[in-house]
Image 1 (spheres, helix red, strand yellow):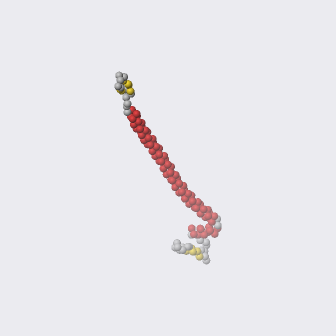
Image 2: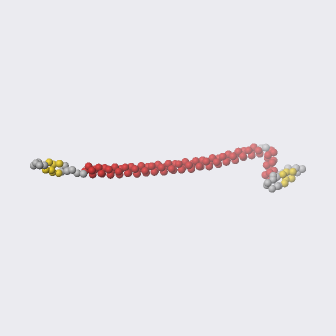
Image 3: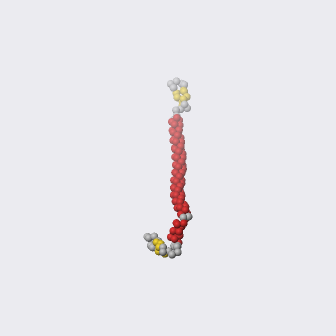
Length: 129
């Protein structure tokens, strides 16, 4: 408190003018900056965590899709092999094809036939007497 004397014998007590409002204002600004900085840091951390999660999910999705493509290719190849084998089984029920197959694969011949082996460029020729 500050005592001020006026031109009279009476003195008036008045509160001392201080810089308290300015001091409070500076402190409040400092606290607000600190809070904004902390909120910003937390926001960046949350964004980073979610970004990493999205990246990992995308990478897992890409790997899964690649595995699906490889599996589809293998499946198509196996289906093709199965079709060929079914066709061969059906052909093996045909007597003429079975005879031809046994002659070529196992070099069998009918009685009285002569078999000549030629180079791979030319097919095997059978002569009957």
